[in-house]
Amino acid sequence: MQALLSWLREFEDLLQNRKMADNQIEILIANEEHVPYVPIVLKTIKEAAKVRGTGIAERSPEYVEQKMREGKAIIALAGDEFAGFTYIESWGNKQFVATSGLIVVDKFRGQGLAKRIKIRAFQLACQLWPEAKLFSLTSGSAVMKMNTELGYVPVTFADLTDDEAFWRGCRGCVNYDILERTSRKYCICTAMLYDPKTEKKRI
Image: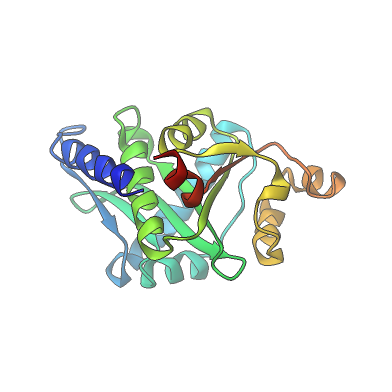
């Protein structure tokens, strides 16, 4: 685990020094100062879902604001301009942690920014909940690739948290009926899991 986190820190340092789209983009742990960005965050998430033609679990402005205030969100800024975002949340008495809502504004895509945000969220999750299993539900191939590089493996939905509060969040997705019809066995998204105990054995 330590070896992996060390590699991630080195990779992040290298990327942090790169100029992207003629702007120096900072990857920050969001806080109360970033609350004014909530509307553009939600707008970007909604637009990204439309472009992909897939569903997404909707979150309220209050929910995203809370994540920022709690220091459980990552925001990317090019100066004062919003560039990207993701957040983390714990489930099942903190036994599971999900990274969700990863998005990058169109003009900043194709430059590795999503990977930088994903890595920072992964680091933060491991720091806050070192024993928890990290999981991701995604229909995007790029996110699946990033997850695989971080040590996530595909799993069944049964391997994820059984916390009803998490699954209620899927109700805002246009594909929720599939999840419901299959008794939560599968849906459009692929389930992926990172288990720190397995990683320790592997290292």
